[in-house]
Length: 197
Image 1 (cartoon, helix red, strand yellow):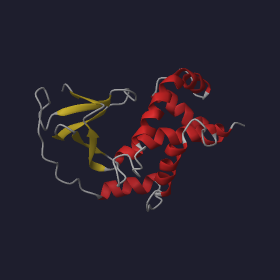
Image 2 (cartoon, rainbow, N blue to C red):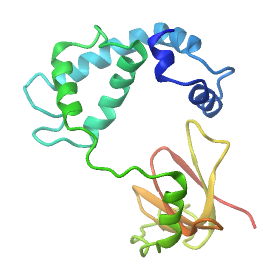
Image 3 (cartoon, rainbow, N blue to C red):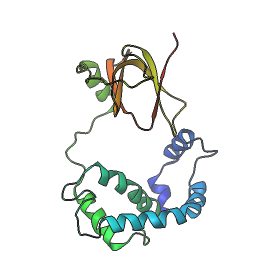
């Protein structure tokens, strides 16, 4: 069994294939895509290495930020798929990756899906954030759909628009299992549309 097969179960691969509209689950097409995109990967690794060349511990300087997480996770996936540390990643980037990995996952309490639903059901949404609408935005209180622009487009989130500004948006909807919940989305990477009554 290949190392990646132990890390990515058939159920997970089937879920990802459906989400990304791939013809079949599995890693065969991923290997083909990896070979095709290798030329695109080389300059990006060069940019990361150059960014870290001044000795900064993190992408933006002395403090770890979301930028580190965004850059780190695809490199981590490369290692996971290979089942080892990929030789293509330079030592400078490796030192930065090891620094990120050493931060760990913080403190968390294991919770089942049913326990999480119970927490949501017992909670009350906080008041919406202040809004700053742009021209063409649906009105607050309008029923809207929010959909990713790249994948997962078959299952939009639908609810009442309760806040929106230039960077984020949120909708509320009622679910029999959880009661009223507020779901937050970044503005970038998502399409917002009114839903006809």
